[in-house]
Amino acid sequence: MDFNVIKDYLPLYIKAFMLTIKIGWIGIALSLGIGVISAFILHFKIPFFSAVVKVYVELFRNTPLLVQLFFVYFGLPKLGISISAEACGAIGLGLLGGSYMAESFRSGLGAVKLSQTESALALGMKKRQLFTSVILPQAITLSVPAVVANLIFLLKETSVFSAISLMDLMFTAKDLIGLYYNTTECLFMLVIFYVIMLLPVSVLGSIVEKKARFKMFGD
Amino acid sequence: MEEILKVNNLSKRFDDIVVLDNLSLTVKKGEVVVIVGPSGCGKSTFLRCLNGLEDIEEGEVLLGDEKVNPNKKNLSKTREKIGMVFQSYDLFPHKTILQNITLAPIKVKKRNKAEVTEEALKLLDRVGLLSKKDNYPRQLSGGQKQRVAIVRALIMHPEVLLLDEITAALDPEMVREVLDVVLALAKEGRTMLIVTHEMAFAKAVADRVIFLENGKIVEEGSPAEFFDKPKTDRLKRFLETFSYEK
Image 1 (cartoon, helix red, strand yellow):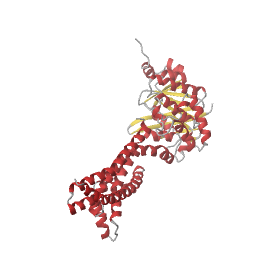
Image 2 (spheres, one colour):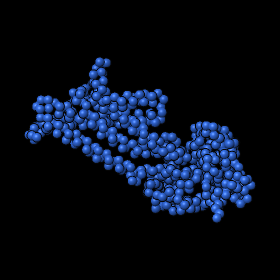
Image 3 (cartoon, one colour):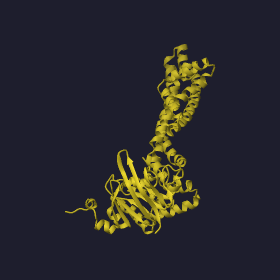
Image 4 (cartoon, helix red, strand yellow):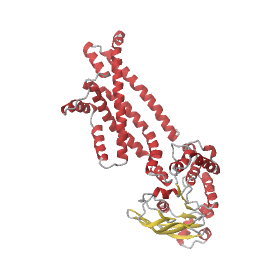
């Protein structure tokens, strides 16, 4: 391995790393928003919207991100809507993530025991009061592990952004390999940068997971 | 004495199974009514109907002159006046003991937080759990949790208290500490409907005991008559299952 090559490529990788993180986290923020709204709609069985959310979730969970990105990136301009590759990446990731997050939050809401609702009702609480002060806090705690798993999964999924010529980590690595054939160095750096991007999330995630679990169950 | 709770011809079915069959009952203010009976006889369902946790198909439940109706808009207002304690305690796991108790008075009754806290601490002290006020439910034993659940119901100042097999999930040693609290409440003149399998407790606490089977009242009477001179064969056989002879 040639460390001079690594030193030369470092600025390019850092630039790609920042871009990947930026779009990754914008996409994740979008997915959290979509997920929460979708989960509420499913949980409260809001007519019509429930059906829409179900179709959305199934459609996006059962198609690859790459296909979804192509759809947004090449499809929308045909309808006269043109968006930048960055926006397209973030929206694509947000839509895919939203479908996963929706399921995670919904299962959290569903996992709160019925007896919790009943004891709150017996105390004279109205539906809204019991949702905000009894159900929701427990549901959030219960969905933490699934949400953390989704975060890691979504950040890794950013690697398909290269397909819509976003200069992310994957794109940069492939580009450099194609130009200079320094395959070993380029792939080595690629792995390291993904680990730098994901390790803090998974470490932090398991800390939050433990804390949430402890608060609720004490072990 | 003033009638506080009136059940008129209450019937309920789960699919084809008749759970409550044309049940009527009147409870006076300050009266303690204990309901016993074999598993699946409808005891718990009956209590759940009284505060609208179950649909009422036929008949009516009246608290004073207010009808308890699961489809009514202001059911929550009526429920404030009916306290209920469940077998599985059902404290809120994400809140401390003190928060568990003060949540409903503050949110539902919009009472002043300082005043509610003061009352909560007094009640906790009464059941011997003042030192646990900042703990979480998971840090308490079953008996302690159940005493907190009773306090949580009491702080709403209910007119009637429904206790649904509140010691059924407890170790024998813990049963006593919970039942002592209930006995003290009975002495205070609280109106209570109690479903239990603890016959000695029923005898001590009840003004009236009811034997329920297949959704019907088979026999009722004062504890003395009920336990010592049961009239029906069915009740005799039921009571025999609780006594052992060598």
